[in-house]
Length: 150
Figure (cartoon, one colour):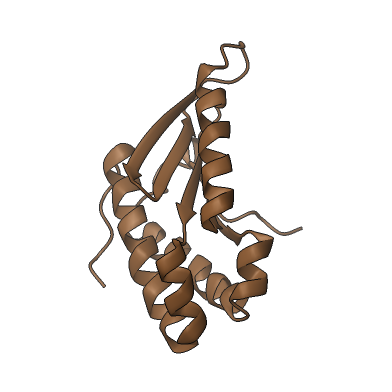
């Protein structure tokens, strides 16, 4: 039986098709950020571990997710209580404190997509820096220790 790691990172299908190396880069970054957050003591209390899912999306998909997020926040059912946090124009999260789930959506903008498509050697370092900034925002939002600088 395999245990689910607290942090999972995915890319939508359009990004996988556009950036052929993105899945291998994501696998490495997922391991790296799970380790970094562990060493930063994000998981000190096993009953309070927050499941974090990051979605990398192309611009069109990001805009669709933004609409979904607004609808999720407006939903007032007893089972779900989502709170939306915008970190920047291209990053937002939905957090459910009751279920200890944070879903974060990160846009790979049109300009970034063009650059990363033309210069694939930039993909790994660029995503590493961008996601590191996202995790710093998550740390502030959830009052967790910040990650060590890159």
